[in-house]
Length: 63
Ligand SMILES: [Zn+2]
Image 1 (cartoon, rainbow, N blue to C red):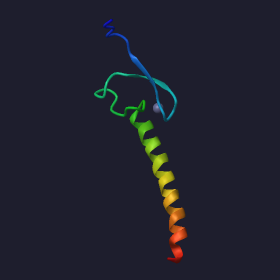
Image 2 (cartoon, rainbow, N blue to C red; image 1 turned 60 degrees about the vertical axis):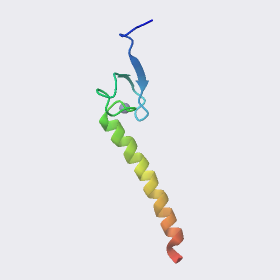
Image 3 (spheres, helix red, strand yellow; image 1 turned 90 degrees about the vertical axis):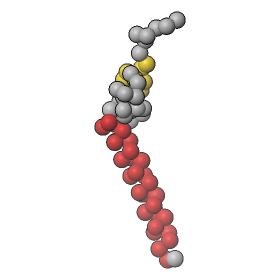
Image 4 (cartoon, rainbow, N blue to C red; image 1 turned 60 degrees about the horizontal axis):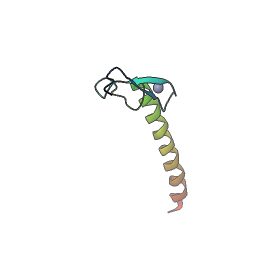
């Protein structure tokens, strides 16, 4: 039952590419396949947040 050669294949949430998870030491960008994908996803998230804040800012303009 100890299959040490079995690799964990994960799907990157950013680019949907399959990659092999070999532990946090090797996959520092986990759960993404690469640091680049992590940054892309973070950028997307921040962009959304920014837009929401902008919309709220407009609403509170007459405050
Ligand atoms: Zn990726």
